[in-house]
Image (tube, rainbow, N blue to C red; front, side, top):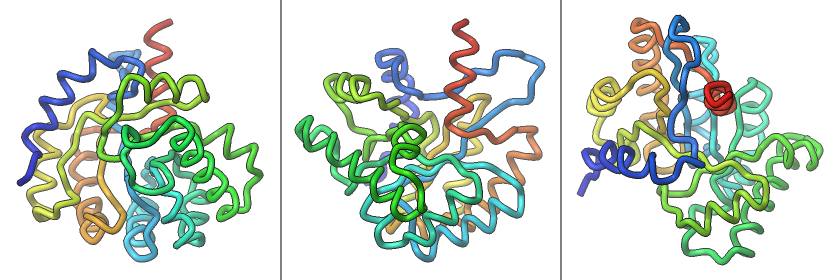
Length: 235
């Protein structure tokens, strides 16, 4: 069963209930071009992610990647390439276990192990990774209030989404594109997948999607820039 029609409803219900999560961005100046964040979960993948990187580089589009630590270990060279291409990196846990199934100590260990794995793969100082890579997206989008409490206590920033085309079930590139274009708007936070589920289509989807969004005048920004836009609006 596909749940694609339910994600817009979930977004509208959960966004106001959990404002401490990043669900979307806000543009401070109405005269600015509309902004969206293109994000990818479940990677890096040895084959899918390099193909995706080539598309992003061809268009000069920045993206944000939420990595699984175990996948970074499997493809350290790909992880290093993503980082050095200048994309924003976030955490998705060490394995794809839902955070609500983990104790606080298990969740903390999962995030810290992922940071250590990224530091090793990308030849970075661990303290730098711990300072910069603090954005966390829960696997399957599942969290509980105590999850958010823990993340805040440990200095992490919870990131969710506003557009979920359910690409991981591979309904076909045309359907994924259709779902995105129907929902996308200024400030949208779009999630696709470059991992073992859905990743086989990610390069083709992205290669078709980016020109369509550019034609509509969208500017691609990172998760960090969306956080900044929300901070600016609150000032």
